[in-house]
Image 1: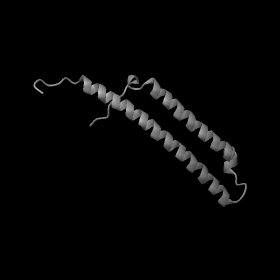
Image 2: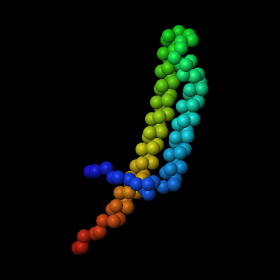
Image 3: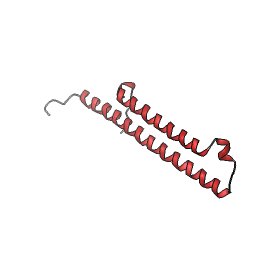
Length: 100
């Protein structure tokens, strides 16, 4: 089965609002995480032990990864709804065969 080619009309205003909310939340989470972990220069310079630096880096990346994974999941859900609307509209355009 081929992937439907969606157009702007397949997405509703609500979909676009939800995308904006998802992206705003994701950026806010990442900004908060970066604030908690200091500037990029501070992340690169060990201030304590090497193990503490590695643990902090792992914690930051894990938290960011979770946030990004959640955002991707939410965006896929929005896209799936648009694809379903597209497919529903296409099925409505298919004429019924005579005698069925």
